[in-house]
Image (cartoon, rainbow, N blue to C red; front, side, top):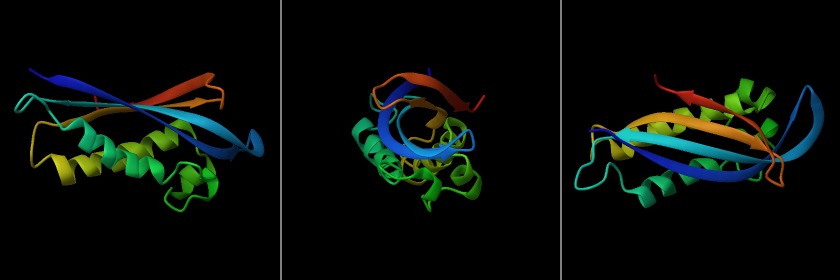
Length: 132
């Protein structure tokens, strides 16, 4: 039996795009789905994986994404739900392989969904990157 775990995160960061050049702040919401077979009642220690993922999120939080040195050139040029989703997917997958896969070889990153919202919470939309 496979179990899915959902983790939700939020952070604030600003960006600018060719359609709106003036830097502006957004609330970014993210949902991460992990799958695996439970071992000793769980597929992963949620507080531990949350802390590991939050270190990646913290590196973008409260920054101007277009200038963030951690993003690749295309993500800095157009920091969108799609490009940030790819950034988070790569980094979370690396963390899982390095820190958690040795404890539970069935665990996988299924999807990362990033939503762009106004600071008051209104959501414009989201992009979901997934392994199919």
